[in-house]
Length: 196
Image (cartoon, rainbow, N blue to C red; front, side, top):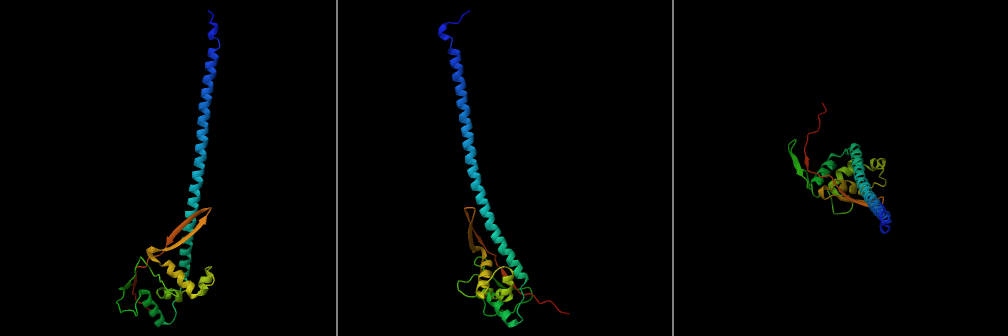
């Protein structure tokens, strides 16, 4: 049986149209996947930049805390007991230290504001640390030009309480901003070790 001449090429045309439709769908899906992968790559790049910047800020704070630990390890109180007592009273914001029993609290400190001081020069609240950790210890830790004012600012910043000190910078075209500070709570009296 012979097909009529009017329908002889119709199957070929329908088949070609169907193949073209399938190719169009495949190209559309491929384009969507490519664009999605590109957007994902750009998003991933931004996420990695932000992560690296955050890690950089955290590393700077950790480095400052490591330096502080080393400096405190090298601290030694000056032999002048009266100066030490005066510095301890200033730490508490008092004119002189009260007489308290062993283990008792001498003063409580504000954990929000810490030991910050609005004035310039040496902060009297951190004078004990400024006098206990000298310029040479700061230079050994890599902090040059550690005048008493610089050492005072260092200790005031570290013991700045919950309000903290801002520290910002940039890493790989992404910025970071952190606040750091240790919270002082109280000063307590302890008896000196016996030398028997």
